[in-house]
Image 1 (cartoon, helix red, strand yellow):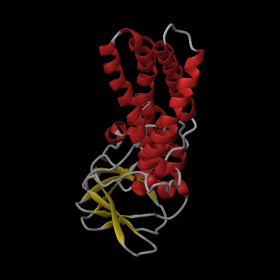
Image 2: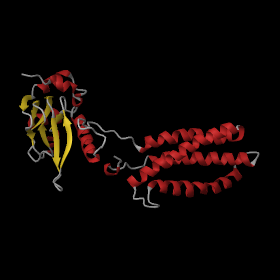
Image 3: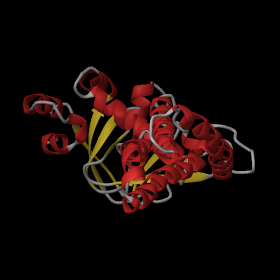
Length: 291
């Protein structure tokens, strides 16, 4: 009888599971064959098991219940698995699986899937991660995904991470530029202003793409114009008045030194506020993500 252990051992679902446990699980998988152009199962049928492909190729398709259109989901090959969704959700098959080439499969029954997969605290978290990633990928409908590719894991970079790429360098550079080079080196000031401007304008680009995907922003038509006009031109330029008033109470021998100190305080404060408030940013929904 063919041995399922080598396939299971290579499968990411069983990472962290000892060899003896995987061997015990492999003993419960039964070999089965499906001829080319035959269906392993069809959409709407009750879930009867979990499958891992030993050899061959399958195509997964789903029919939209509203439009009646058939959509190709993915193509799976040796080492891939399918059939877990209906078993976990205790429902019918959400898609059809058809053999494109003659198939050799290993099948685990519903009862054994419940006992040895869902009942195993080392395997279940891996399966749940894959299911969430696959559901997200289907909803997002990535256009760059090739016909023979399938998504197993999706990771998202949180806005805190993305903005940190711009805020943290700006938080370091800005005090140095305006607190030191503004009164000591014209060349250092010029280079510093360029770098601070780069970090600041980069945020406008981020906000311009982020805002329309999270909030119903319709002012001036797009998120980018909202970020540039409201953030950069209205709020940003109003800080010129704040800087001039703050400079009156800043230490320094000349107006230029006091203005540089005021700019340092304001700029650093704004960057710090951005970092704090970024932790409250919501994630865009899958429908609003770019293709």
